[in-house]
Image (cartoon, rainbow, N blue to C red):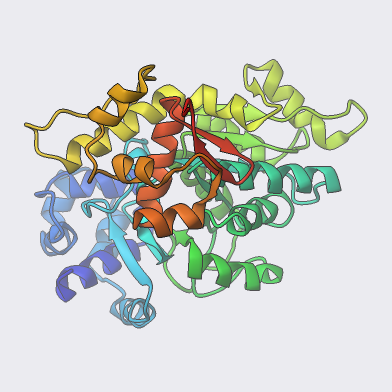
Length: 389
């Protein structure tokens, strides 16, 4: 991004009182481009008032905190760090569809994960050993099936979910309620570094923002907004995880809950969600079955944007004739290369990456599509083709 345009965005994000709603109203008055923030800042108070911005916000817009902007630029100058604005093609479209989508995202790590299909796993900070095991196991299996696991880096279930995805060599995104120049909670410092190296840390808050209590409900609506669905592992009746689940429902996302013992107080929140219509989950397949229609649409949209309009899109519907499948898959497409790499014996994700030459994100997406199409079966952490003789 042009350095002056970047300074404009950073200045806009520092304006007190200009949240996602008013920020969207402000930007709506100017062309959608990477220069929109700079243009909006230069428009002047008369233009801001015409857009219905409060006087306090207009006053703040007239006096940007350029010192803080310089601090943000210094943080962004390090490798792996970037600012993704809502007009950037890397901005996750599923989040942009929500009513309170952030104007921009500070990220550290692999931004390509933002466009991958995601499942959020959230739950109690003081989870039981069984809850920790469930979070880790579900996360590992979902990551193996090609989904990115998104959570909030909190103690308990969140941390176990991130670790499960990483241990399965999958993708994970940690959405933080503070600036990315610090780690909260501090006990997750090592985990945060692992995520920055192999996944993605994300925050809508600029560097230096402390982990205030009011930041976490804001963080939760990003977690749910990024995801196709939210899986609640353990939660008390009064729990921040239930806020995330409620936000997911309001955003049109699927809500899942793992039941537990009636004697476990951390199962009561999950039982409440199930009574209110959340899907009761016993296996990863329960999650995959529920999100299959949304995932098919998402993957079809991605393929449509990646190939010329004249090329027919590959169907993700199950096919029953293997010879027909082989003919319909172009050999140089990700799915064709993956099918060629799959043999009669189960193969690990790493082995398939080496055989096919596909990048991790491409391979994860192709595996998921072929699983939905009934052409590939997951066996533990390995994969093999179905119906081969």
